[in-house]
Length: 473
Image 1 (cartoon, rainbow, N blue to C red):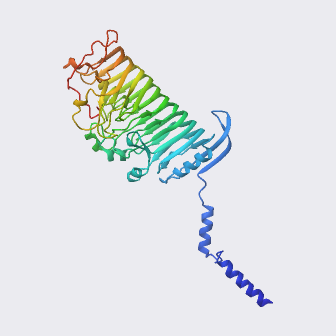
Image 2: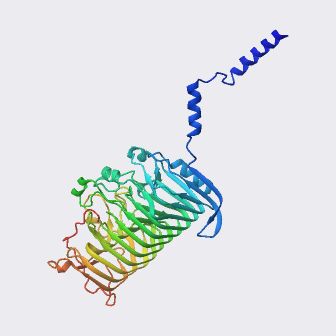
Image 3: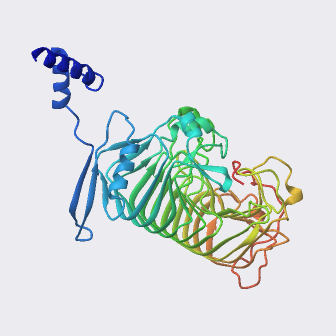
């Protein structure tokens, strides 16, 4: 009987050995396993189901996400936090820095992304050139998309996004719209959004984009693109082209209040199908000012910009980049030449019911500009100068003060096919920086001006004096 039991035990042991590791660990292995248990890192994601939100005085889920540190990628953990608390909850990031090493698309509903530090994008340019979200307009790229409704992005006056842009400025140097530079933040397909106390520093490309969204409010928003490479000083723009502060596209009811921008391109830009746009208390240092457009880049496509109010706008040069334009209306030529982003044209449409008031400018190259033959390609475009199909009308400029850098104050050239009309100018008091060519202080081509529009000194001119503007026109 004992023999039968031993045989059975032997058979069972052999069978289990194929399933369970029956080897006895060594002493060193036991010590190692025990150490791993004792010193295992705590979970980086803490969940609290009944957190009392002091803002709403209601209980809601709270996810607190700790950074991994040592430049380890926090992307997946951020996604996990949003999946757990992104509907009705708060996602709190209390640490100083979170590394983002992959494209992210997050969805928030009745939620708060509560940032107390920086979402810092990695600088692996080859990776980002291959891994991004596509933005079909002008064949651009996106790094970080947030979509949803009724959500808040709060930077708490000490956080936001760090795009690690210096690597991208070095990469693109003085080449405009170089492929693959991703935008830092995109609010897409969203409704009822508040972005407050939020900063974007060193954006890779455009700092922020509002796309296909409505009821978006930026309050106390800051963007800074600065080149720290000494070699960039050889370039007039310090390699800061395409570092727009914020752009709107196919969006309705977008407001900017208390916005400060420093960089080398558009401070604010209203792209096709931007309607009911408001901006108050905006300061722009360097770059190309407030841009309406560019627009009408795609042949046969109708674009509009409508119902815009801008007030309390201040424009200055920076210590790195001149102030090229002040308030700038730009539409593409009427023929399709080349392909986007730097070529195109032939679109049509209109901009109307636009008011810009209480504007101060200091040493701006071209304070007021209208261009209707835009292209960034190198060719003789004189033959297309009057071909633009986009119509600029019902536009009202009031209380503009300050100084131009040179002779030109107003340089406004519309198309013969679609002349500018129903513009009014009130209290325009921008002093020319030079007086050697007073004939170009105020020039208006293909402008329908009457006796009561307020800019009787404006006249047609084909002068090419002071028309070089660093490649921005």
